[in-house]
View (tube, rainbow, N blue to C red):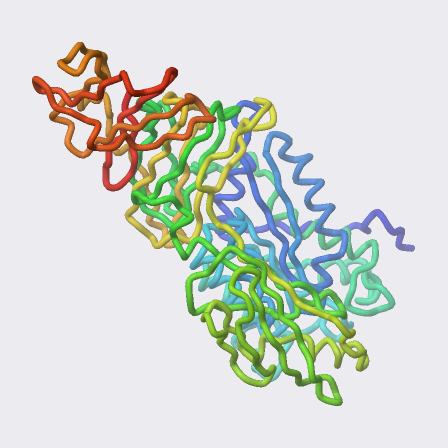
Length: 545
């Protein structure tokens, strides 16, 4: 007799070293975490209703037990009822902005959609990928053909599990979790029918099925004492420069060159002052590619997003968008709609049957991405309620400043994403601390989906150029002075110092030259006044003293 909560005897799933090699980075992040150096590890589950069942929380709890020093963040972005061909449309908004370390994926479909999801992850993130094969939900599947060379494409389920998904995993360097094989072994070993692990003999898992599924997935993430872990922070897709061992604060400036599409910093404790972020001499907010759309709000049925994807043909503004449907056909499958941006305003009208490009170009909708009509059909013709609207936001994929933090225990080891979605590079990152000192950052991390990540100190030292302010007595009375050889530097002033300072340039007409110095008479300036020199280095502001 089977007792729910404890599986019957069976041989556990044991992944090969070759399979685990595809998960080398996330496994190294987990196994090399220590109390002194806790690695942040971000894991996302993605799929359909089976991925939303509680087995995924059991995996999360067990991972925290196995790796107590890891700073785990585990999320589930699955959408019930969405097969792989639909999830490849939502993945851009659901997964890419997260920049996860591991995506655990399962969804029914032909398998080609799984390839598209994996392709998106490979093109836009540095995530490792674990693709699950299907569990068994029919007794006839226990003896199905598993030799890829002998399976016909018309034999859909075996072809998907033993031809298509293995091909997808190999093509994208993903790990294939052999859930289906383990499921068959468990059933045969204990003389069970497929329904013994399912709710009402259907596709969803009962208590024992949940236990077996979590065990299968955890097999790929459990520690192996004999395994030699690579350095997860120095590999093709991720490079790191440590502050104090490769990077240095120089008069409140941290300056480095990098190649990659995402840049993050790791905190060593509280950030003592606001730190400005400059990339290629610009604030990240000025890069159009660092904005993107959120997932669209649900339909009136099943939690499906009203649009599986929203595109754009123009630079985005930070705003909320609203789609208002109307004039539904008798069967609810076709309708007209209008879109409006909270800043753009009314931006055009369209039909669910035709490609839509808004007047501003900021919204592009393909006919196949509408899910309101599908919601009406699959709900048994439940009509869309009067007054229904769909909403989505333009999200920031950047920070213009490293936020102030408080509490050393809460901030140590935290990873702060500064920008993701940049072109591959090369780029220049300059961090400017408003207190003129800097701190609170232990490392800069660069991610490159292309596998060409690099980062190095740019070696700019404002003091080496003699960027030092002093007070001299000049013909204009006491004056602030700095070397006249400092071309390209500007003088700024503020009535405050530290994080609350608001710096502004001193008008060129007020600056004089005298005996090899540039000078500013101090008489007209109210007391107290604070001054700093700012250099333009590749367009980035570098404050002197």
